[in-house]
Amino acid sequence: MSGMGEKRRGTIPRARRRVQTRRALLLTLGVCLTVNLARIFSARMALPAPGQMALDGAVTVLVFGGAAYLGLCVPGGDPGNRVRMRALSEQHTLCLCLLGVLAVCPATLLADMIGSFAKSGAPREAAGMAVGRSARLFLPQLLKSALLAPVFEELFFRGYLTGALERLGRVRAALVSSLCFAIVHMGGAGGFGAAFAVYALLGGLLCAVMHKTGSLLAPMLVHGCYNLTLVILSYAGLSALFEGLTLLSCLVRLLGCLAFYAVFLRVYAARASRAPAQPLAGLHFTGREKLLLLFSLLAMCAAVLLGGMKP
Image (tube, rainbow, N blue to C red; front, top):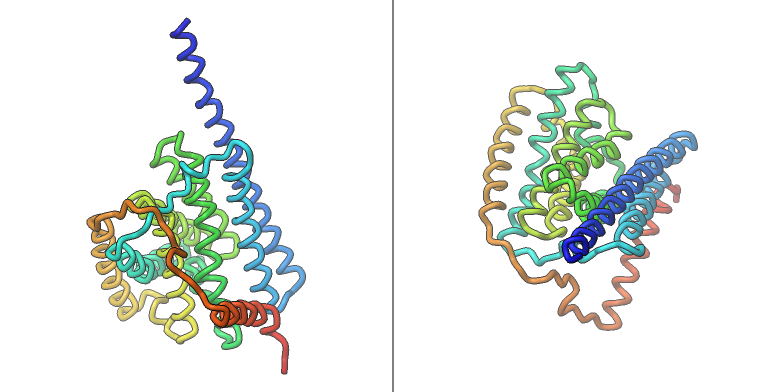
């Protein structure tokens, strides 16, 4: 009887994990469909750049954030075992920011090499380099790419999906979540093979730094700094330095790849913090500071929604 009781108790968690895995895959399918439908709607409506950016930002927040909430907080969810929010040491924070900046070099080099081999002709889009350069869109682009996308996408892919699939094993869970991450992102990029390879490897990198540091803040930092670098390079007119297989471009990016590898080793050598993350601990705002923060947020929203209107 005791053996039967132990066997029965052992089958319940496995059944629950199977249900959680199916739920995670269904949520991922829903995310893919919704994101692509939003892209089709945006293309059919021929929205201006500010409207398209506002739609992209809303989709990022609602779709990825909503899916993560459904997966974690509905009955049967287990956020304590999935969302890892340990604090990061100073070493890790610095190295992770550098890792995100330097990741542009291997990503663009890989996209160019695959694009040249397949003659797809779209390495910029595949590596995420094709962002706008209109001055009025700089702040909205920065808000969407360097803040909203890293937070909400990482909350879903690394915070929820990777944890929900851990019954498959850590490596398989990271592989599946990275492939899903690539599928979601390649829909708006040219060069199918290049886009898939770049985003899949980027997803694997984000999974690796999360498991090493034990914190979801790590992939958020890497993802945010990667997108931030792309936006700044584009608006500064330096994207051409990271395009094509010219001698100068290849030399710059090969040096960047060496630096990327060195920083990646430092991330694995740095000592992880065991303290729980408290991002807002010790922050006390006065009434005037709260008004300034509110005004800044409203100004950001106005820039997104009204940036395309002529004076």
